[in-house]
Figure 1: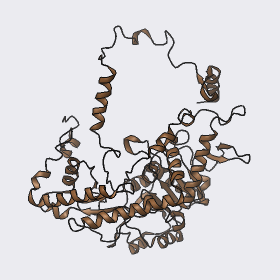
Figure 2: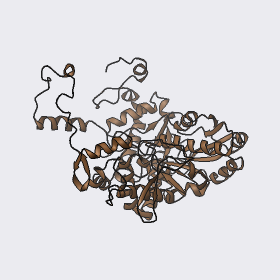
Figure 3: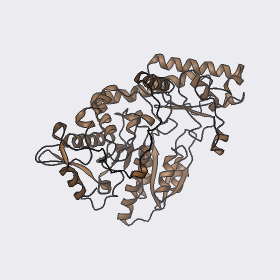
Figure 4: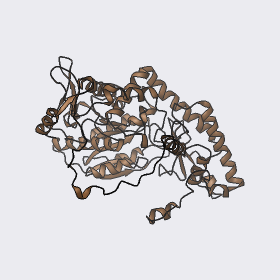
Amino acid sequence: MNKKTTESIYKKSVPGRCGVTLPKSDVPSEGAIPPELLRKTPADLPEVSELDVVRHFTELSTKNFSVDGNFYPLGSCTMKYNPKITEKIASLEGFADLHPLLPQLRQGGMLTQGALQVLFETQEVLSEITGMDAFTTQPMAGAHGELTGIMIISAYHRAKGHKRRYVIIPDSAHGTNPATAAIAGYEVITVPSDQQGTIDLEKLKNVLNEDVAALMLTAPNTLGIFNSRIAHIAELAHNVGALIYYDGANMNAILGKARPGDLGFDVVHLNLHKTFSTPHGGGGPGSGPVGVKEALKPYLPISVVEKRDDGTYTLNYDLPDSIGYIAPFYGNFGMILRAYAYIRLLGKEGLKKTSEMAVLNANYIMKRLEPYYTVPYGRTCMHEFVLSAQEQAKNHVRALDIAKILLDRGIHAPTVYFPLIVKEAMMIEPTETESLDTLDHFCEIMIELSELAKTDPSRFHEAPLDMPVRRLNEVKAAKDMNLVY
């Protein structure tokens, strides 16, 4: 929207709450709609009472799985409880009623200074948590943050006159990593994992050269394993002029314990919904802030929230080397606000306790289920771990079958068939928010299912039976878009 349009809006406005001016009306004036588009007869809408409507939608809501109602052991997609206090804060009138086109300062009255302060302080605290020098809160999802980070890396190499073609990614990586690199114009080199479940160091050395722009790593990785050689790997990358990128999907495991910047990473993205308990998926939207080291600050997207000498906050658009706009306005503010409140609520020691409990819970479940399922990498895990249903598959009960029957037990399915390097993978992440009773309940069901796979495997193949929609034929559904269930 240009300046002239904005001024015309304010000229036609009337005083509103909190001194904010609002448009007189958004109802079209008479004659605004062409006659040929107007209805000749009233719409045939159902006549129902408020009570009927409330009951209808309440009944629909009970058919949904949600973190508030069910255990979500989704590995690598941290699904933990969203504290209601952060929801309350996000609904405060002073935040919820703001519009991004409101001016930063208006005749001495600070209309948006509180929101800008939240953005600025979130950037500062995320920098401290991750060991970065600056952050942008603009990216609107984890994958969007990845793309922003790789675009920053690309801008850095261009400014240095480097002509780099490749991005190195381990075979255990999230699928968004190679997709992001390809979208940014790079070719992907995949390096296999070693027997310990971490990137094969010797094979990595064979492909690291001055044609490599970046190495993308998740720490701990998607197997739930922390690579103790990560600082050495970063040094190897830096020795050939490559940068190292931190996929922050698993930051929940090391929160307050280790900082990616201290480990040698140059760029990091965080998933606020995974690490800082903002709503996830349908309850989103997402948010994927990106942090960078000092050398990469000039390339951050515009605008950047800054603090003036007089204590007020402003948006700086004067960044000639910036990668430009990557999102409308300043990111998903409601999610950033929730994460900010969550961090302030927990504090330094609370954040440490988060990772400690997440790691403890994951190891507890892994040890309880180890006698009943295959554990491909028998190491102490971090916040998540991978089981394999290879033994159950001998009786024609696959990971997908176990995932489906868990729905009948009131538990959301874990992530299955990922990472791709584990056959019949079931990736489990309990998070720190679940009680011991919930963990034991889940373990007992998984143990029961391992026995059922031996005695009555046919029970798995029609599951779920108690859901509103019966089990889909995924292959047929993918091929026939007109298929109706």
